[in-house]
Image 1 (cartoon, helix red, strand yellow):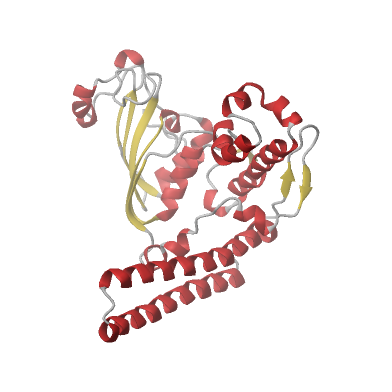
Image 2 (tube, rainbow, N blue to C red):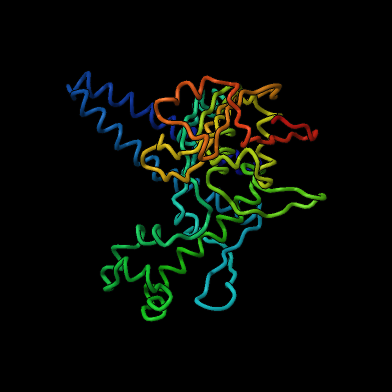
Length: 335
């Protein structure tokens, strides 16, 4: 953060901590003098914290708006049914529409005092950052239903429906427009510096992937020597657009394991047989001198659920058809 923003943030957190301690003291006196039962104290404290969080959210959203607009120069680009988007300055309502989660506020003691989380385990979403009709329907379904629109009709002819119904069109364009400044933030914020590819000294823009954004966010939230385990698409090991993230893991972390697998034998029952994943684990800090990899990503090499344990333990079962290049900055390769 910029100095003034950092000071404002510290003030917001301090106000919360002081208020909670003051409230705890009052609750203790109520229990001692007034005989308020413990469950009632807990409910009152929860309500008090919720009220504090709502007030803090407004202040933190303003700090985030300042970062978007003043520090990063991001603007709102209003999508149109046809033609170019119309630019304007971002407003606080645009930030509020994103419902941002402020990690440093809600986990202040973990992030600021301990340096981050000890362990993070996650299976992040696998998708590109872009507007999705299903998400739009989930967010605005009730409003659209009131207008006589239904999800099946939207899926079959959204463009025609948007043209026929101005309110539905406004909702869709507002939802779609959010992605302009979301993408700009991911491409320019320091927290996501490893999402781009640099070639010949120029930063190239690749599609923003949620799984890779999660990977970098997990790295940031870990304390030094913290451990992370997550499931990613197997192309994290090979795709050129993930090179910067691989370099991060090689030179700022101790990569432990990378288990690549095909789901042809339905290890994961709720996913397609075409699914090819990678179970990856690492510790934050130091650098990677060696790492264990067990890679079977072709259908003929697919592992059955019964053979999964042996597969995960067998460091010599690298498939002849699944050699993976994991490039570091010096251009060396592990295969």
